[in-house]
Amino acid sequence: MQSLVLAGGKGIRLRPVTLHTPKPIVPIANTPLLFYQLELLRRGGVRDVVLSLSYQPHKIEDRIGDGSHVNIRVSYAVETSPLGTAGAFKNGAHLINETAVVLNGDILTDVDLEDVIRFHKDAGAAATIVLSPVPNPTGYGLVVTDAEHRVLRFIEKPKPEEITCDTINAGIYILEPKLLDYIPEGEPFTFEYGLFPKLVKMGEIVMGFVSHGYWRDIGTPESYLQANLDVIAGRVKLLDPPVFVSGDKFDSDIHIDSTSLIDPSCTVKPGVHIVNSVISRNCYIEERAHIENSLIRSASRIGTGASVSGALIGKGCHVGKAVNIGAGSVLGDKSVVTDYGRI
Ligand code: GDD
Ligand code: MG
Image 1 (cartoon, rainbow, N blue to C red):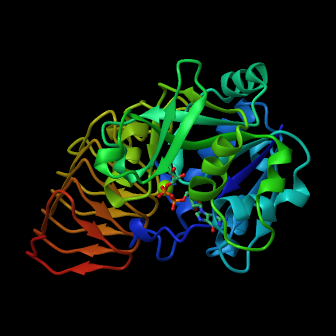
Image 2: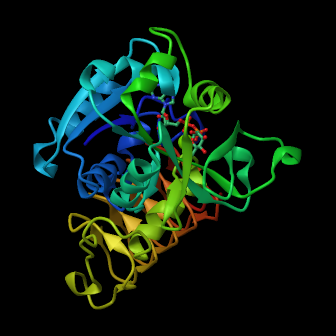
């Protein structure tokens, strides 16, 4: 089974996280998002993956390489300018010659792809779209199905009055190669506004597979932070549990709860409290700092007595002494908050 991962978006809604790190490789619990996706695909029986890139492609190629370290063959299709989701699939078509799993590169999920592939084949579908129920579908593609799970309507970013169900496009598709004939060559075209509504209209068999597993689009700072917290809480059944560093590694006067994930390269000084948080490589946490429900990216320093709660701190930040950073705060890479600052 082959796969194409759509990993070319600019990640605009996830700025400033994506200014220097393209969205597909932002770390979730200290592991790049794409590694979770490659693991999902490998478990689903996929052995060949095409990464469809456009924004900062070299950073992704450098991080993922040929995929040999995760037992999957990775090749690349790079667009000179973004072609949209379906255009990107067409652009990678020369590398695909069979039924393919196509995945949005910004989702974290543990859906069982083998189930989806079986469902697709049994239905004799041209396309199967994995659906996830969400409380508010307005930010997604709304997918309406009939009682036999056949897709009746696909409405991207529906207006509130268009919402008649709670199932949305989870950004996971099983697609037959013949669908490439519906996608124009070399010009922008999307699955969401172009291909899927067209297929439904043409009477092609498009099926919806409702998944009740873990699913999240990590494309906003709030969602990205929550994805990190979900992984450390064990809500995503995917990779082996991350290696936690318990309080034992550090001084007895340091309090680290059992869900927090702290890279062993970090320095943590006495009197520090860390609760339900992820701390990446080479961070320096000064005396009596208090960190909870937060993500601190690599090489950041949290000053003496500072408090960081519900926040996302970028790479190489300097948070001064006695600073108070509250819920919803997002610091870009290399931010400096001077002593006693409040955010
Ligand atoms: N290669 C390439 N080229 N990839 C692209 C392009 C492009 O021109 N445009 C977008 N992508 C990639 C993004 O990197 C992302 O991984 C994926 O396609 C989806 O794009 P988003 O910009 O994140 O779309 P969205 O989140 O607003 O909506 C999409 O995802 C929702 C689920 O998370 C749609 O597919 C919705 O229907 C869906 O519900
Ligand atoms: Mg998205």
